[in-house]
Image (cartoon, rainbow, N blue to C red; front, side, top):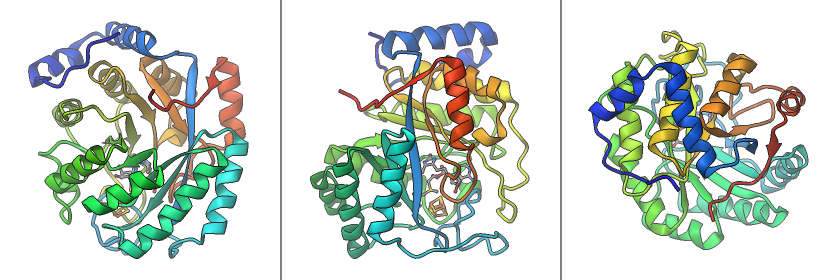
Length: 320
Ligand code: SAM
Ligand code: DTB
Ligand code: SF4
């Protein structure tokens, strides 16, 4: 069992980033197979239950109401019956977790009550549940725990230093406060961020240190590759070198050895070979189905062909 640490220093992480690529991959993969079956992949699907007109100004996000030039089909909170139909379809496709996202700064108590109903019914189908609704209050986290929610997704997105160039309407500390409330309520934490927003390699190091030095590692760490959306302020960010993206996955695996690293948004823009290297480096989960929240994802039939060719099995990965 690999030791879990919460005191990573920048110098240590710089040393990891400086490792030759093959050596880094070997170290990451060794840790991965000590803690996980490397031939298993956990599959989730996403559903946007409320789309667009978000009051936040996240520079990467097509759903922000601030980015007027983005082409997006906006949608009010979906009705429960449609959500349940989508969840059943996701289960049929092989997903073990159903993640619902809403473009809110924070939910009202009334909206939360509706989402809680959805969570209960999705669980009853036999799926793990994850939601991402923005900031929460303490009573709201307690109500979600009571409803049986498995995971809450709330990302730090990037380093503390780079964050204000990406988002101005919500502080880094507010994100940390929500994460603490979720953790204290006893809900599994899903927290990660985005690579490819114009951040430096040092920002990536500092972002990983923020995650790994949390009092408890997030059970689930989504690493998104920026999906560039025309009309968002970050649409023309410098693309990430594939090897540098894989390095982030490998180092996240080393720094948080017991967390499930999720190869999240951006797979449509990646080659199969790049994705395989991400799995080898320690990514143990992907989103299937051809839409994420508001942007496209690979077709499930293509993903399944790819996973079959690799001999990957798929399974549920709730922490024991
Ligand atoms: N509104 C909620 C919030 O941000 O707290 C939840 C939904 S939001 C879409 C969830 C996460 O998706 C963001 O924190 C961000 O990391 C990721 N995301 C959003 N747009 C993205 C994009 N264009 N490319 C990659 N990841 C993105
Ligand atoms: C996360 O870190 N990635 C997912 C999930 N959490 C909610 C969302 C990715 C969104 C990608 C852009 C979009 O489709 O809107
Ligand atoms: Fe709103 Fe979430 Fe998009 Fe930010 S990432 S604009 S909070 S939906």
